[in-house]
Length: 379
Ligand code: NZQ
Ligand code: ZN
Image (tube, rainbow, N blue to C red; front, side, top):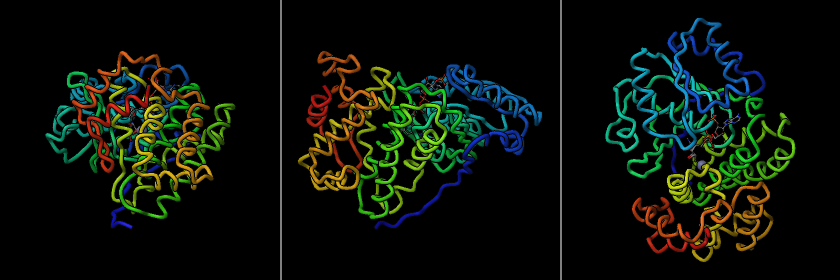
């Protein structure tokens, strides 16, 4: 096992009606609240009204920044920072999925020094403080609610990249599984894929840790148990709650402690597909993971066999890859590019972007030739 520091300062409020405490929590940071949300699902399904009622009950002044898109853009972050500085914001309430919460994290570290979002993302500047972020999660997937990661796109440079810093943890996160009742089937499936992918990225990382492997196996097995039940019964509280907690635990640090590093190569490849075709994050992962495993089949057979033993009760690496692919398919998440109407004519541009952005994993390095093999496997 590797040496490690376990640090996670997020105060997580989980369960039915936990947002009843939101007003008091927000008011403890000040009166001027920037309320950040996406394209409108939160208004349609009533979460916005609940949040506004809470904030008004403690006399907060609400300043809204809406329209954050899935696969969020750094330009929106910059616009929000300008607005927030003008309104002397005390805290940010981020109401939405990963895209909204990730944007809020970068907004929060840009405000004190009036930084540009991309300067933070590219680590040209190092922020030394942040406005507190209070996250209200509406989609179980990314784990952003209990980690310091934020992922943004910059169409000007054709990059989708991640960032983290000790100041980019939310101060509080509110997770009421009832807020995810309205997540449509495709996004529910992508969330399940995403959480499994997070567990796998750590599993295929550097360093052995017995407990990490067992945590990972438990998270994946739980998601494979509740995922299909949830797809059939989207309004079942227990199914939503279990998947939500699986997603949080898949990327809140607990699987990584004791390991040297995760790999994250599959995520890096998926980000190129989101950048090029605006594909939802989880959909990119169900396409890339089978291809990546096929590439690694002869390179790390034992590790794939160990996964098979832990998850699928098989020691056969090929069967393990097939079982995982079949599981993603059973959720109706795409497992190749043809399923998202991306044909052979796009091969060259995908490979070109992968080469340009030097896409690789932290542990399993990918060459330019690997990019070609991977894209072939994805077709
Ligand atoms: O825009 P709105 O109207 O809010 O609709 C969203 C969006 O269309 C909708 N939605 C969210 N909650 C809903 C809902 N619809 C109905 N009912 C609800 N309760 O779902 C769509 C997708 O939302 P988005 O926030 O984009 O999804 P997700 O949570 O999967 O976040 C994806 C983003 O997070 C990044 C991804 O790369 C991607 O940009 N990631 C962040 C990570 C992190 N911070 O740790 C790690 C991940 O690996 C990932 O990279
Ligand atoms: Zn992910």
